[in-house]
Length: 279
Image (tube, one colour):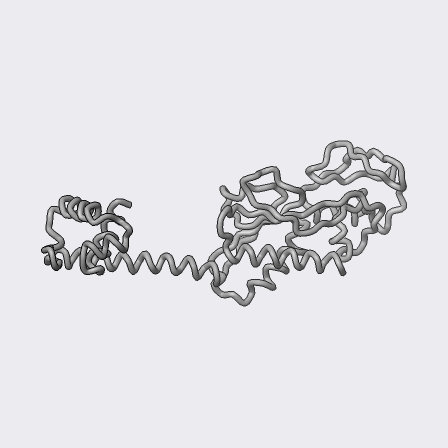
């Protein structure tokens, strides 16, 4: 950083035409700027500028050093401009994670609709029931059920669904006698209010994806919770009781300016969620 600052100060002296004008431009005193130049020449073991009270001119070494400073300035400007453009034009990799229940029905359609025509954007999708650490897994956006306790991430509620206790349409087993298919996050014993009464179920089967739960329900292996947003997409199951409201949040690890791809993805998913729930 010291070398970079010295090079930028030297460029300003050369392009300003005098030490006085350069000092004014940099909001430094003339003596301080002169000391910077003197120290730079000492470190480089050469004279860069020949100065009199009325004019200054570059030495041969000074001309060469100035050209290199200009090349560096071009690189700096290019890096700066590319980042500014990236905030306005979607590009680069976007990594999104979501649970199985939301990925296929919500996240994937929203992302393909939003980014399918953008050749400079590449998607990496991670379908997981686990609440993966965003930083260590390089995740730009996470869609999760329930609010996160991690204050280092920015989160926004994007919608809600209801968990519904479901049974196979072919089942004639009384609810209180049915086997219970528990999700991986549920305890061994689960209590639900069914038709106004608290009914306690012991988990007979356990799954770690909603697809497995639905498959077991269809196979008449028992009853289990299914998000209401999935009911219209799966025949062979019927709703018994609406159990609880589940809030859905979008999280990202960006504390400052948020990449435009993340903003676009979050808004698209929120929009599709609202449309999905209104159908």
